[in-house]
Length: 168
Image (tube, rainbow, N blue to C red; front, top):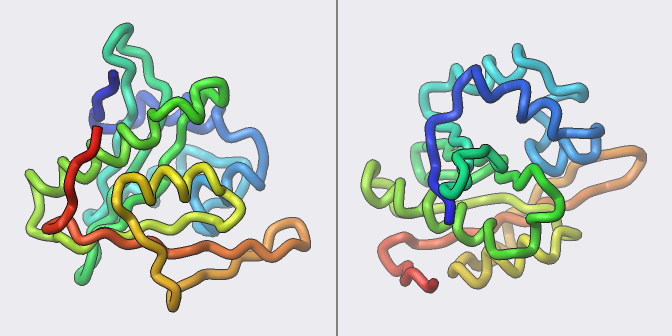
């Protein structure tokens, strides 16, 4: 089991050390950050009053093993920067737990009900995770990013929180 706690400066080094290269950073955060990730970049991003960052905590031992954020926009809330730091823990349902907790946070703390996220099209396991929760691909909204002379396509996925049914 996991819980979300406020992400603060004490956890910056752990996040920085979990990003090994520019490709991982692009997949995690999109084009806003430049590798290597620095405390200054994190601080600048989190100075946005519409952005809330969380550390993902293992309830059993209070260790941090992930990161996630919500950015509130005028028309929607955007989930992003979802990261399970330990690769051996990926694919075990933690991503679904993280997204569910983010949606519950929005339900309890915001009037926003239109939820979006972006995911690169090659990240099939994440897409499948988001679809299980209830997100659908928005076919007319995509973003293209250049990475190492490759073109990466980010798909936009959306969910109407008023019609979301939590599935455990």
